[in-house]
Length: 224
Image (cartoon, rainbow, N blue to C red; front, side):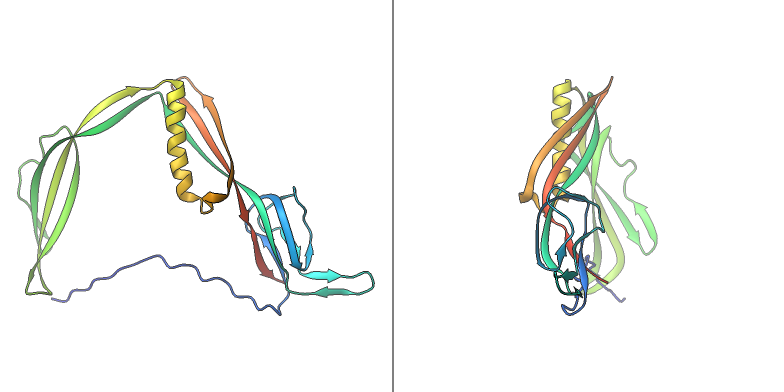
């Protein structure tokens, strides 16, 4: 008779806090080509146009004067670089697509404890369909749930249609799908500075590669 409702969400990663009095470098979080570097504290060890890899030191945590010894410190500054993101998709010239007709039927299942009873002989007469499942627990009074569950199965009829695409249409469709996926994965969409599409036609398919170049701040502190 006890009911528990638990919600689980992904937690944001807490930023690492580094004491400004501790000595540290600024290193690259991603591979890319440097577009700008501003060292407020420390010594820049890379220049515009340099190719860097993840983990490379960008601004070293030391300063050295002409007549003074090396002094170690907490590096400060901003480093931006062009980062390349790639996605590849192989698209067939022939594709099967499904469309809903608007026809549907409903079926029900009853669960009592760990026993399940189907209240139908056949789930659906449709050749192609998708099923939407809705579960409801019976309850007595406001918050007292019974060990009885009713499941509603709604089946939506679909028809299959075979489509043939030209090379140009296949490239366009594959590119649109790749762009949608890329947009979902790139955080700094407003900083996209270049887009390139590379194609490799085959006998029955075409391989499409989408490349985005994005300018990002790639520096982060690392103690030493």
